[in-house]
Image 1 (cartoon, rainbow, N blue to C red):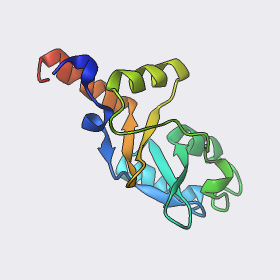
Image 2: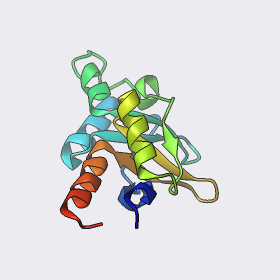
Image 3: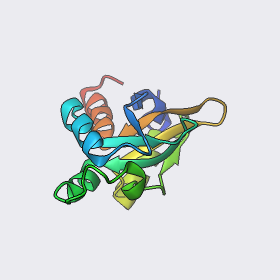
Image 4: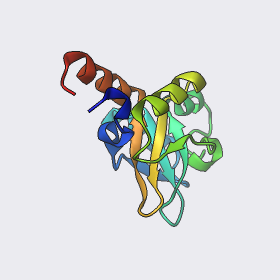
Length: 134
């Protein structure tokens, strides 16, 4: 297979952790630190991905007096970069690099949410390419 033909789905983290829009930032922080998560997806009442919290987003508010009352929906990013599973890996990586995105939400028209592709996933793909594993 040509490297330019690699699909993002091959390196996507499937079914990552997520929280409800009403989760407190304190809850989110605990989950992120306990599980080693840097990007937390936020879901609405229907279970649809509606936002994203980065470790940096949550840490910014960690010293706030009302940290335990602030909800995910109050600070989550809603303008998410999304791609389909069959999008070429290099296209997603290039877009992430140009826009300084830490991750991309991978969705499918038929089944909906599939996973998340992070900068770490991109580095893992690079390692596989450089080692000749692909």
